[in-house]
Amino acid sequence: MMMTYDLFPHEMLGVEYYAKVVDELDKTAATNPSKRRLLLDGVAQLDGIYGMQWIDLSDGAREAALRKIEKTEFFGTVRDQTITGLYGNPLVYRMFNYGGPSAEYGGYIERGFDDIGWLPQA
Image (cartoon, rainbow, N blue to C red; front, side, top):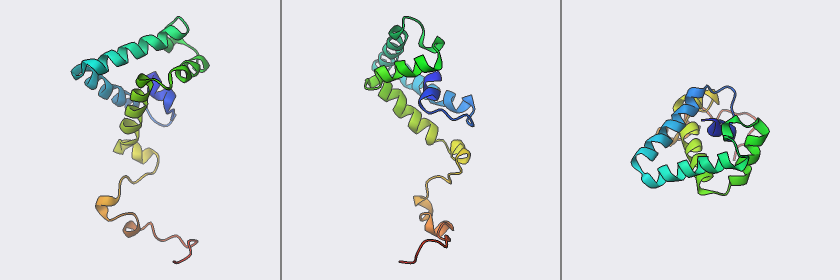
């Protein structure tokens, strides 16, 4: 879970939002042997960078280790799942004052977001 937080740290979000991302990764690993192997190997690679468990490293050392693997499939998988799992969560929308997708409601203009006075008329 620390990796998801280190990739996208938001102090206002509780650990439960990051835990949900990890739960989704766990579900994928449980049903997809190649993803399971990818995740296990990725964690082992992180642990091997400084010869100790990545989670026990200082903040700076964890970041440096992540930078060393940022082009790997493991990093991309965790990053992508964190983006979709964290920022696609309607409960997280509220924390950022985001109203969520608007296409199914006719867009933002018809929902009162066209009332800005400083925007010149077209």
